[in-house]
Amino acid sequence: MNNNTENKKYSLKNNPLAHSIHYLVKWSLFACAAGAAGGLTGGLFAKAIGFVTSVRTDNPWILYLLPLIGAVIALLYMGLREEKNRGTNMILTAVSEGNDVTVPTGPLIFVTTVLSHLGGASVGREGAALQLGGWLGRRFGELLRFNDDDRRIAVMSGMSAVFAALFGTPVAAAIFSIEVIRIGVFHYVALIPCVFSAFIGSGIAKRLGVEPELFPIEQIPWAGLENLLKAAVLGLLCALLSILLVFTFHKASELSRKLIPSAILRAAVCGALITGLTLLLGTADYSGAGTGLIEKAMAGEAGAFAFLLKLIFTALALAGGFKGGEIVPTLSIGACFGALFGSIAGLPVPFAAALGMIALFAGATNCPIASLMIAMEMFNGRGLPFFAITVTVSFVLSGYYSLYGSQRFAFSKTGIKVEELQKQKQQN
Image 1 (cartoon, one colour):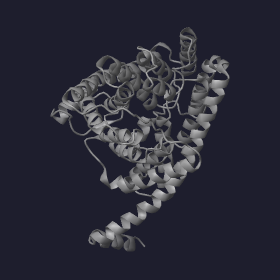
Image 2 (cartoon, one colour; image 1 turned 120 degrees about the vertical axis):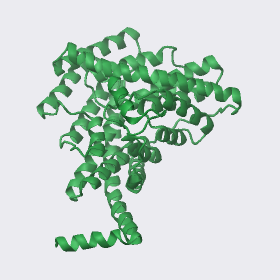
Image 3 (tube, helix red, strand yellow; image 1 turned 180 degrees about the horizontal axis):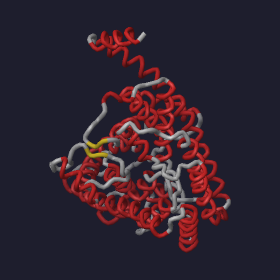
Image 4 (cartoon, helix red, strand yellow; image 1 turned 90 degrees about the vertical axis):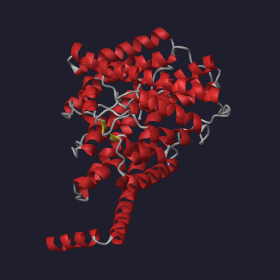
């Protein structure tokens, strides 16, 4: 039996056409399964988030339950012995290092993200999408008895499916799942499973009534030298803001653990602080993921300091252990900052808000290609020269800071040797 298997592998390796056909069939079938599972899971997850958000909006008093909800989330992780669960970072290392994805991860992140949104914590959905998808991909890989290399591809495929299901941006979802793992290395072997599963997952979610995240922009300025220079300046400022954002998120979590070792008490305290700040400001604009804040920014209705307030609310939520992720809050922070810049620099505010969204995403995640794909899909492909400039500048000047501590830099952004680069990242 083993000899037959070895002979088959040998014959495939020595016949490129047969090997390519085998690859196409194998991963197309897998992508169908992963995409279907990811689309259904992502669709149900999106529906659950939408439902609890409506409940919270209709019942503002739920805000007072946020400290209790935070404590419940901490108890759930403790009860299932997942206190050391590193969330999205665990998914990234499952690809980069072949580490396991624990069995409770999927159900836990689903339930706790829904609870976080019910209470109004400033968290997103993409972290949960990546964890749900990575968890599904890993389980499928184990079920099919894939080898270590194939399991890593399976994880990326699952990530793509659920991410695309939630956001309705299949191309960006596929590219992001591949690009985010190791900056400078693109795993082309994962293209077919990631792209196919992303489109299937997105299609199924649409059938379930999940609307894609689209923000039409009407007024695109002329791509002359002056306007392109303004876009470059915005990219530079977003790079600096991304450093502040990543530093604040990480330090807030680190400091909260040091000051309040108990996860339950820490969640309750951070939940109480969020509740108090919301009452003090008299608005729920900074609750939840921030999609509503993006819409306000693009309409020119966000306050001058909205980006800082959203950053503070998100830092508190992450420090308290609320679940969901950082990307949608990051997009909303970028939109508010971009709108402010546009009003000062003379760019159309909706368009500047869109540029700020994508530039800050690029700086914080170090994924310039995925950032451009998100811009293409969210904004109907308009204004590409401006997005290319802001994304490029933000990506290069943001250094080696990252929302994800497990993200690896295989190559430097600016020509520093890899050894020096690793030392610099450790110092940061």
